[in-house]
Length: 79
Image (cartoon, one colour):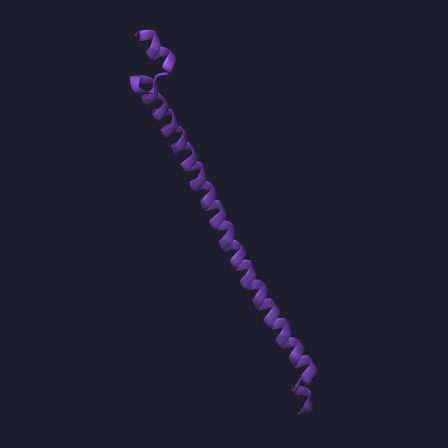
């Protein structure tokens, strides 16, 4: 009957291994989640950079078309 029971040291070692395996699996899932989040943020960043360039060009065009934003040299030449 003693054969079916594991010594206490073996049982503790098995429990520690199980705990470590579960911890590793949890960390792997966390890493996968973080990696997915990084990829999503990179995509969003690229999209926002592109939109920012378009808006910057639009503002630049508006400023060049408006007399309010002309350089002082241009204004003094008109007088």
